[in-house]
Length: 633
Image (cartoon, one colour):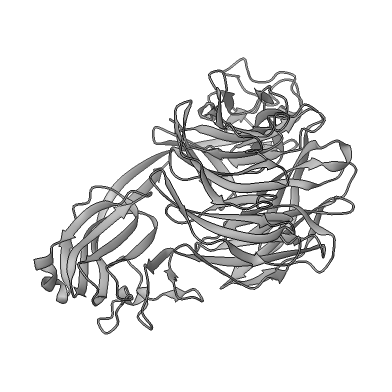
């Protein structure tokens, strides 16, 4: 299987196959290549949508269950789906279910009522949080106020917290976009339709409780904030795309968040031409740090357009723009996401009948479009969609048939992204040549495939200059403490971070915070509130194989103490401390873990027979294994 190789700094890219990397850069028309360069002459799009065996699965037989949809990936083969449920578009509860994907088949879990009240699903979005939690943000009540609720998944069981008001201003939930931040908080952009201003806030989730920050006006100008979409940038900032409510021009802005304090950059005009975009937008961050925006041009029957923007600090610049389809309503709904090879799979509606379509895009200095594939020919099957990409190379598209009482469906599509591995190479020889638009390869070379060249004047205006490397990965054992010792906490003192690590705990007693168990200071400690069960968890910046740990802890009534690791929701026991062995850990003691895997999350789980005192004075690594990559040209 091919694996994407991307250099985020130089904005180049490539493909890795069997540990061989091909690193490439784009060369546009009019530029030069050098003798000896290995060149892939672009003629066609990388990637293919496999829909031949795809069948549609009805998720709910009730009407209006697909009026509003929000899907989020839980793990490799499970999808969380929140959706409306009611008797009309003005009488909506919120329900949720788990979909388990096996090949082209979908197993539908129990449909659980999350909010049992009318008018609660006029807008709906879902954010995946750490572990097995989902934050639902939605409009609620006849006045479209802004609300949120936390859902937690254990196996196929969905539980949820309290319905939490985020804003009681009338129509404050009229447009919503939400993004999970790198520290686990969630940024929510929303528009007060009654005032016509764009606002933003940061919320923190602790257990199933929601703590909201200050609701901040992002733009002083009124009538902005329609069709909001947002994505997380590589530096932790948030990019927001939105429209002007009166002239439907498309705008973009960057929001910086520091301890829930929001700072905004300039609101940049991206498209004010005719046809205009801006009322329906979708965004995603590309592997090189650029931002991709797909949108429907409101003034011309929702034709489908795309813009790529480069980001530098808080500044935005347009890199390229393209009309992707000139068919009516082809941009009425769009869902883009990144494939493992760096290309984009764009799911969208098309034609006045609202059919469901999908295309693959290759984004460089320009946008190259692949075949626009009909995914579902049922009328209005593409008018309301929410798409997630699974790790097994498939896309799960949750959608409704709006012409048929908004029944809720899901469909699986295979994405063959491996055929992006370049095989049609030619060698530039003797001297430098200009790359020019032509019907034949524009340099002194021999084509290794008859597929090169041709008459496609769009695709042959650029080439890929490629270099081939060999990547060797080895495992290196290191000793010492890998955990940081100096930490920075959020303003609620529930999470602490340093050097890409995050430490948090089930609860914290006053002035005995979780980071104090990991500061290599035997005079400080973490202590939770008295209870029967507690845990302290470390999130690593990348999976590590920790083989030995040092621990100093005490527990009044120990029943079970287990050190565990995971990369998902299923914790694996690595070491168990029995009741009689607990006194051994009153002093700093080294533990040999039964660990054969690389885990991103580690935790110590404490279970007591009755309420008592628990302290962790020091927790650190003693021996760990890292993967070291060596690249040989």
